[in-house]
Image (cartoon, rainbow, N blue to C red; front, top):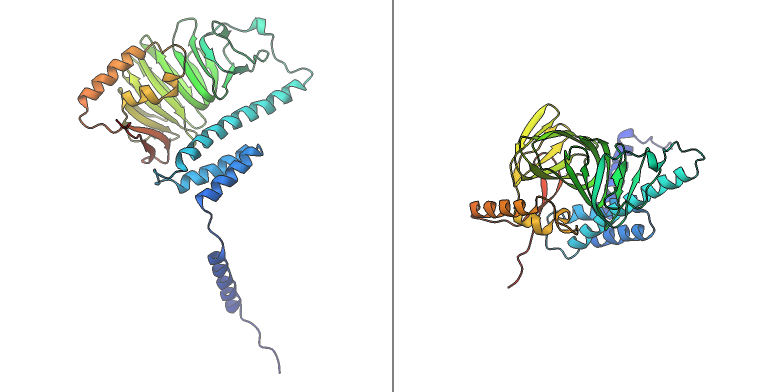
Length: 332
């Protein structure tokens, strides 16, 4: 008696049922397991993999603001990003050291285009001139330098010739001083200010070429987001933003995300909360030159606002979605 052939339809049904059964049998990871695996990779110095797992854990905690692991995951993500910055530049430096002729100019020939006003921790400078592994206050940087701020460090510098703008960076971050009126932000958070009416200032991130201008002294904060755009918060003055043929105006307390194709919707943030929570404003030995005016602006904003929502705006999740963290009020 012959064996009847198996039809292709039956084979497909068997395969689909097997795959369906396997999917039900696959174990579901808990946030604790994902976090532990991420920390294991962190300890093994596999920082890229660790960041992937920690971000996955953060995604699992997206709406679980009271979860006991949430703050720890956020902390470890920040630390891992810092380690990634350090490891990448360490690898780059080792590569440069083995070159017989790296083409770098001597430090004595470096330009005096940017004055370092204050610095703490370890901040290094690369490109064009010989490497500088320990920047100090009251020294100068030339146009074209790439500056890397390591974890637990910070730098404040000013365009030296016309005092066009001041720039602060703290914790893990990296930026390039492209010209006296432009710079490129690779990672990290920044405070940008000008004590005079500012000509257009060009600020570039991976996927956003932004122009900031103002007819009066101003201050703002800028942070590089995970999608290669920027988060901009106006602190003082009135700033005009231009990006991809589109424009946006911000006044103190307003925030917008600069995305590759334009701007997100605007939202308001509480300036008094920023003053006490932002490392850019609290970590330096000396306060920013605009600090007293910022406190006055925060007081005016508080008087205008009847309801106060103490929140910190995190990363961008799309044109209309942002991470918001509610700050707990201190117990009496």
